[in-house]
Image 1 (cartoon, helix red, strand yellow):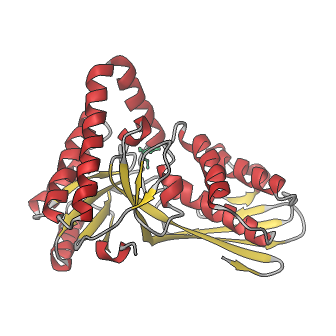
Image 2 (cartoon, protein in one colour):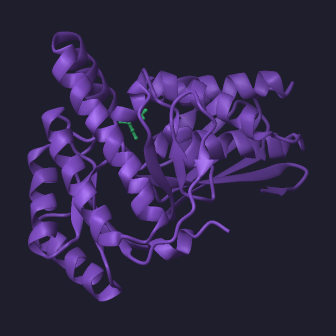
Length: 317
Ligand code: MEV
């Protein structure tokens, strides 16, 4: 975070859920990685007149912000009020490399970067717990019933093992391998997917609880695999998790197609990541060369974009 007298910058990054999405909403564990290849920077400058927002999604006065960004407007008003900072006279520029609505934590990362920039502008210290309170508030408006996982991992430098309601733990990573992420190019629908699972839980509580608990058990096995560098085992666990997510009806034709393509390209495992119903999938490879071959096959099978992430680079010392 950088401070000048009349301007400030706040940053954050996207995230990838390795395993445990959806189940984490029901108090099961999940593992997620910060994804620095997808950063967000928010720059705030003092100006005269009304506050304006510049972003790829919306450009204009804060008071004219579209309903889809109510979370952001509410966040800015709340943080400014707490800081005794006027909500007028700011130019807020959001530059994001996180594809929006793709399950990469775009809304939580923007909320994190905005909060950090406002605190920096007012030269006030922001504690981790204050930051999480603000981002949770914004995420509740954006997604209805968030677990809090996105809020925590988009501001964390380390991979985390997270269970709702408990303190999250940085994960000791001892993994040699590569994670390939691919975007279907189709907007994900986190809110609808989370609501769909809630409906399934209401209509078929016994079978849905079983699926959720099974995903939680896979997350715990994945934690052990991550900590002991068992990448083949981790791959199998990811593929199993995808089958359960399909049963929860949060996958899509495009996601299944990319998962199948990755497995046909000798990925060690593959699954959707994030809310699903569009958005992104991930696959696992042992070497960079294999990861590049998988990424290339994913592009041939309709991926809009791919990323390769060396897992060892997230080592937590
Ligand atoms: C969304 O990135 C992850 C979900 O598990 C929802 C949540 O944890 O809030 C689907």
